[in-house]
Image (tube, rainbow, N blue to C red; front, side, top):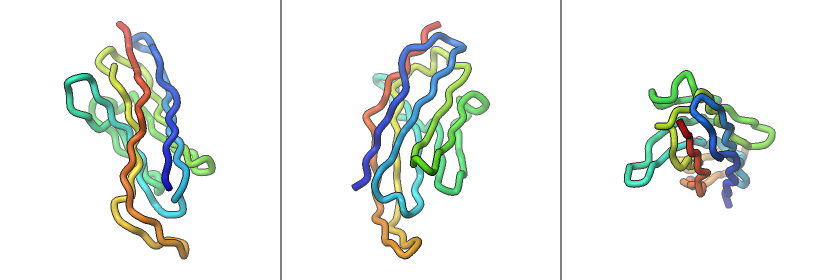
Length: 126
């Protein structure tokens, strides 16, 4: 069974930095994607960044050049370094891990799944 543990978040002033982490356990033998989304009250959840087990990364235009996503494969942990934070970055940030299809890798079958974390809050004050 796949599980996520998020950490990081907290209050920060504009221009400051924070790092969020998301650790995955279970079913890590096959490829998967880890992503961050964010959502403000009354708005739709929006994509922030993603990284897959081949280290392919993607970023929303609004965070390019300020946020960096990386992963510690040994610890199955994804890190989102957020620099030069702006008040408009204030949101709940949600980690997501997904394997869209069932895979057979390394002699092991791994089921598809889609799992969201609870979300650390990142309030950025001006």
